Image 1 (tube, one colour):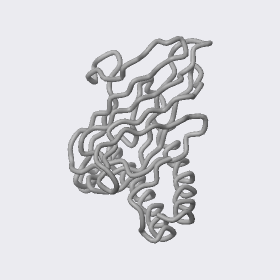
Image 2 (image 1 turned 30 degrees about the vertical axis):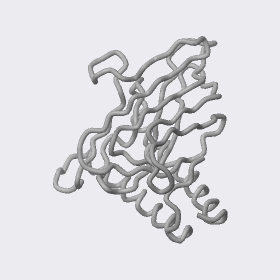
Image 3 (image 1 turned 120 degrees about the horizontal axis):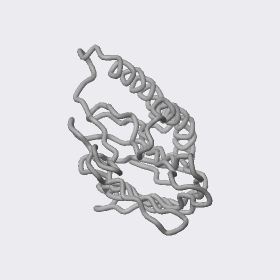
Image 4 (image 1 turned 120 degrees about the vertical axis):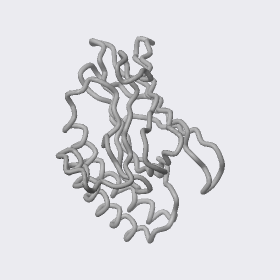
Length: 202
């Protein structure tokens, strides 16, 4: 991917982050680490967000987030995350590289606010995908978001469907609209970038 295409892709990713933020706000009542949207399509490149709440009282802040990526969930690229330094752990090389873990450091997210990260990704097949997230506070304490759904610190999960048709539920209708909006955005990415390049990592 040349520098001009990369810049256009990053610009569109930055615009796309507004959509991800809207998704987070729509479900902001949950005081847990979460990946949005909670329902998405298999074999489709889509925009996702990871939101991790700072629950400890001031002056503690969230300073580090580590996300372990589930098997079959292929991350293509990341939107900028101002204030954070990103390190990516992969297996394989070149176009065959697979992102297994992402570490963000340097943030100072205060109590009552979320650490928020956006990325384009493609789930390989339908099913439940579980993300393990480790959150470190400025006082050195660590929260592992890796429990079952009923646990104290549940791991973020998403449901991936082979299609979104026929359900008739309001949730699926909303998700279908969101996926449609992202599809339009990605069409613009493909148009401006000429379709080149597998991923541009921040």
